[in-house]
Every structure is written in structure tokens, then in C-alpha cells.
Amino acid sequence: MRVRIATTAAGLTAFTLLAVPACSTDITRAKTNTASSARAEKPAGAAQNNAPLSSASLETRLLDESDLGSGYLRKPGRLSRHDDIAVVGCPALNDLGGDAATGGSLTFPRKAKATFTYAGGSNSEVTEELYSDSAAKLSDGISRIFDAMTGCPTYQVIAGGTAIDMASQKLTAPRQLGDEQWSQLLTFSTGGQNTVVKQTAIRDGSMLLIVSGSPALVDRHLDKALAKATATS
Image (tube, rainbow, N blue to C red; front, side, top):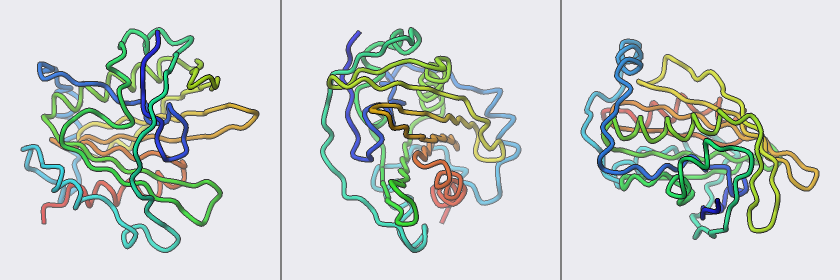
């Protein structure tokens, strides 16, 4: 099955942010048990308002260079290039259908995104994405794609004629953050070179935070990204 996805400008190749389920308006299933358990451990100061936020509001909640510290530079937004993609060896991803891979970002209408390069490491980047919608839609959308990707330890992606060997590993996300958590480690192998990308997603009420990139940078900035995203003032 061939689908079209956007090749991101973050240098992580076409599949780095494939966690892009097209969430229809009739999704109503929420992860109520997990959310109820995690909510009891929600850190003080986290946002309590579950009304979806506008894209403009989400933009103000993204990290910036002053939050990250010296050595970081924000990359300008670029138009995405769409390539034909063939997924080989992962039926779960194929079962999601073409709508599961229709861009470099989730299809929720309320969103904001920023990518930063870090001078302290070779090819080190970190990308923050924020989305806002009902808790049920956010939970179902991100769960389906994470479950599919981590359910296939190895598979292959054919992107624009280039074969990319993929390996995925489910990680334990920090349970003390937000209402629900997901995390995975992706290894891209092509042309004799390997690229390792960590991706962690946190849902807090009606907001979804995804931090992707160099594993060390994701771990370093995840807490502060969530704190700023859920700040009430």
C-alpha cells in the first residue's frame, strides 16, 4: 500500500514524525482509566481548563531560545515535500490506511510547532509540537499510531525510491507528567548510517505535547516544555 506523507525539514527523514493519525470528528473513545489514575499525580500548576485552545494560544506556549538556553537556534518553517511511501513488514501500519500518514503533523486543526538545532552536538535537533482538542480525540489519535509503530519491532519504508530500515522500541514514559504518556525510540538505517530519534507524547487535559529528536535533548527539555504548555498564567 502506498500513501503520501510529508518529509519534514527536521532532517529525520520521511518517517520521523509519522505519528499523524487523521482523527475524524466522530471519535469518542477516551482512555478514562489511565487518565483518571495519572490525573491524581498531576503536578501542581498544571492547566485545569479542558476547553480546547486556539492555535494562536498554543504558539505562545511553545519553548523559545530563552527557555532552552545558549546554543539553540530555531529553524524557520518550511514547506513540506510529499513523497510516495511504501511500508513493508508492518501490517498494523498498513491497517491504519492512508489517512494515518497525511502529513508531518497531526491533523488536529489547533496546533503549533517549533524545531530547534543545538550547536552542542552533531545533527542535534529537537522539535516541539502542541495540539488541542477534546481529550477523547487526542487520546485515541495518538494511541493508535504509537501502538501500531511500537507493535512492529522492525520494518522497512520505501520513500521516494530510498529504502529506510526501521526499528522501533516502546519506552516507559514519565508517569508523573500529564494524564497520559507515550514514548518510543526509532532507529532509521539507510546508506550505512543510523539515526536514532526519541519521541515522547504527553496528554494533559485538552492539550497534547509531542517532543521529538535527539534522545538527550528530548529528556532534557520535556519537563520544561510541558510546564510552559500547561501554565495557567
